Amino acid sequence: MPGGFEIVILVLVILLFFGAKRIPELARGLGQGINEFRKASDDIKKEIDKGNEEINKPPKPPANSEEPAKKEEPKSDQK
Image (cartoon, rainbow, N blue to C red; front, top):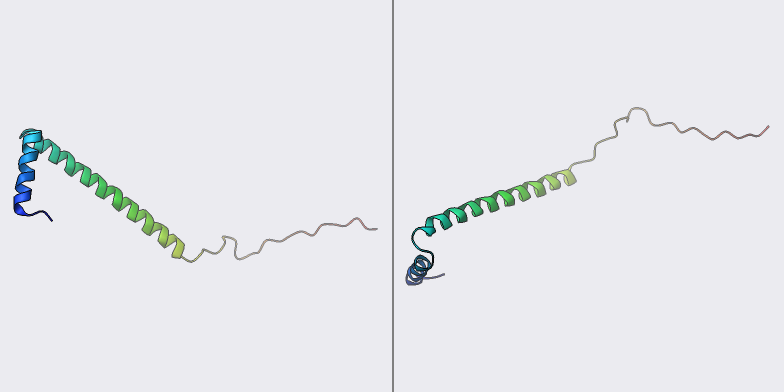
């Protein structure tokens, strides 16, 4: 973790490099990027949780569970 003096030096270097007018624009862009990253990571977490719920959910019975399907036996041509 940088100490107080190191942070002051970094702020001065950034101020000299970018100028006072561009720093708010850079901070705004950085904030928007962080928000987009959080939204994307939340969406991914929701998708993973949804998938886990579907995997852990018991299977549904078939729609026609009352009457099983009847198979017809092939007719033989014996006389």
